[in-house]
Image (tube, rainbow, N blue to C red; front, side, top):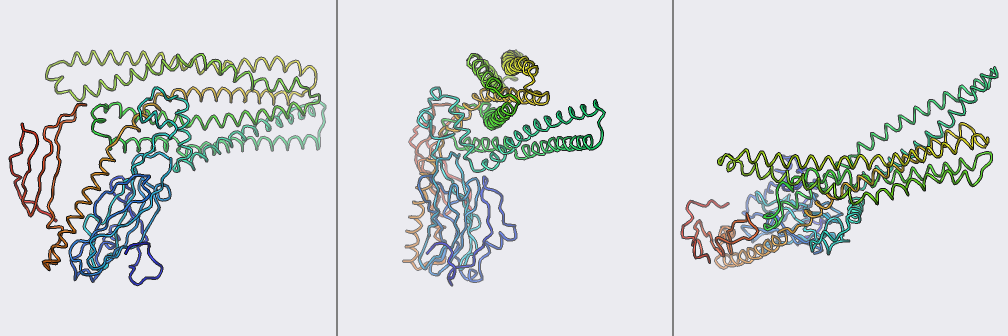
Length: 622
């Protein structure tokens, strides 16, 4: 029987609650070496037996939507007695509660039992992940000992989702990327990041810090308003020659406001440190890079034949950084600017309403910057969108051409040197470098111009309001301190609009990187083929092991391990070169087997190259 560990069961062995890690992609083992050896040490009763308990394979594959996966635990050697072993799952790149349900328990083998399944429940969701895995480990054997290597195994979960979400799944799987709108695709990536569990906490904390900065900005405006009024009153008291309690009260108020302004600056420094400490860009880049690497390691062979290593390296090192820093983070900063504009607009309305003679004209004048600035910026972005896209694309193409040429040069260095053709290569790479510099110069020049337009429009709005503020100051409907506070608020409002405009420019510059990453993270892999092969050979091995076990029972032979009688067989082996898209097999449908330290090669369907040699040397099987 197998199942979760019961509370009171005499047959159940003691559980080891220590988690453990697995495999190359798994996190490092959390068991110390001493504890690991102790967990695999057989019980005293195992010394009288020759049973070995282990997993049926080192790696198991499953699809995310299968619901459950069965992990085979097999017993080798004597099968006429009872033995048991405990098991436990452990997180690696797959996290319990997100991709699968954590489980621990025990497996009990009765007389004649060859294998027992462990069923792990999988959690299907619409969140994209490259192939992730978790691990299992056996420990505390009773009546047997653990296998030397297969007391651990890894379970790979093949995700059927597409990057970044399922919204454009049909177009992505059909590789019709030109039909996918870029901005909505980037928004889907941002939505994926907001829902991605490892990033949720940092994202929420970062947004909270940005909004706290907005409240600190508003507090600074109010404190400067109070400081101005205090200084004006002190000047009035000094002009009139008044001393005493009024002067002392104003001085005390001045001390308090100055101290609060200093506190505001210090709190702002602490908030900035919190933002940097969250490492949000680094976490986003880490998620993209690790998933891209997992995808790359599992590409189909025809995919590897057409992609360039230089392109993958550029995507891994540069595009991932650009998408995290210029694609995801500016969306959060836009929330900050939006919150700042709303707070400042509320402050302006309250300030205009609190004046001695409020009227609709004053209120409309406070609302004008929030209307004029976005209209001007949107019109400019609309007019410059096409030319900016073209310049970004030209620079990207020139950069990729240079990197590809450098890769080809490094790969064919011996050929180039042998033909003494280095001068031609230097000339070509110099031309490509000049093309890249020219394209980047035009792109950077356009970016500088685009970035300055927002400040120009904001300055024009401030100048118009300065002229209007002189008129209302002459009318005496507002004090100097209130006017300065309005100007401060207006400057902050136009600055927020300009900041939002600059963030939009950054988002636009990240679109090429987004397209590259979407392409590479949705290329086909060979994991489903591996899954099918893995299950086929496990089934075949299990059937042959059971047949040999029945033969041993009829022969009353329990001294030998059944595994020693199994032949190692290679079936349908094909050898081919994969340097080109069209792959022609050199050998096909080859067969070979190894039985009892002997090897006999089989036949191949290729008439040009028949394998006629014998495999030499001794085979040491353990």
